[in-house]
Length: 203
Image (cartoon, rainbow, N blue to C red; front, side, top):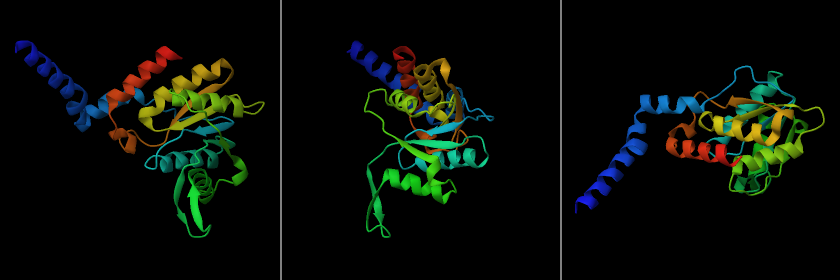
């Protein structure tokens, strides 16, 4: 019985440390701060917008469009996403996620010929797979890359891209929003730290 109670108590303590306590806004912000390695002066020949769900992709595309309009990058790369989205009455069919992303960037003033879609292979280290895909999509002379993603994903993404691309390509991290503003800020932080540890050991 005592052994059972100890296990239950240990589980409750672990749950409190990993789930309950990080829900406090001030503690969550403090725990998330090391993950946000945003570089205000990020610039390069090209920017890559990491893949995201419907809640985060809009802000990432907006941040990338800002980089383009400020003259800090010359073109944008997006991961291929053929998933079917909402019905488009102008097209008369459901629009793919790729089509939506391209159209959204055009709406934000980015010319269509400045946007390229990059096929990404399925892999258990998905961010590393995106880095591999970008390596094959870079043109001659493109040696400075800006990686655009949510603040809490920024350290892991930067780690993956720098290790995959090596010293030949400079990688600058750019957050798509302020730390507490993006939807990814509400995701379990312990899981992001766990993934960061896995990436650090595996790459």
